[in-house]
Image (cartoon, rainbow, N blue to C red):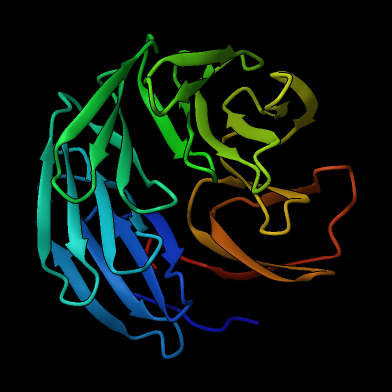
Amino acid sequence: KQIQSLEGHSDVVTSVQFSPDGNRILSSSGDKTIRLWDATSGKQIQSLEGHSDFISSVQFSPDGNKIVSSSGDETIRLWDASSGKQIQSLKGHSDFITSVHFSPDGNRIVSGSSDKTIRLWDASSGKQIQSLEGHSDRVTSVQFSPDGNRILSGSDDNTIRLWDVSSGKQIQSLGGHSDDVNSVQFSPDVNRILSDSYDETIPLHDSSSVRVADMSAVSSNSIFARFSVDNRRLSDLQDKKSLWKCIWQGGVQITGLSLKGSTWKDAKGVTLLQMSVVEQHGGTF
């Protein structure tokens, strides 16, 4: 059953996340706004404005006190999650910024861009620490490993790359896709890497041996793949307009946005227990 319908955005919703304490919901949109919602009542708490172009991604800091956002205006912005005021504007990329992610300790930010670079930033000063170069096309997705020692990136050059945070050097380039890589993610135990692509596959990489451990075929137009919090199940979300609620033996997992449907599969081949569409949205959240 539908719990809430949160409406306010006037364009496609690009990113959505619960706060670390689960009391708030954060969303970003092509309407150039970031919105905070009360997770219980569904009421909008604040609208954060400042970006001058499409907002591609947002994330709470691990302590829930800050928000980081990336945009087509070539800036990364830091916001106070309580007041909604902008703290910093981080500049350095020369093209659309596609993805941002806080380090597990909240001290650093990693960003990926259409300028083919990955950049590491100090979250306190806003200064750029280093620029990681190696991709030959747009960087679509970046993420810190759960231990904060590595960075994972995906790109339109069809590769996934692993980087050492301390040195900024590339550790490995992973193949497996024959089309643009849309999203990448470490498993919570750091032992596996999940990616998805327009080539309609989701390879599961072993991060220790850097090999493809499993390959799952999915329906077309896959844009988003994620591990569940228990590290056992995979989700593949296509497009971005329905909120899906997936119920597993171990509890309730609420995730992302999809238009045509969502393919869920256990990382070891175990099937989904129950899946239900919560709501089909018309481009708002």
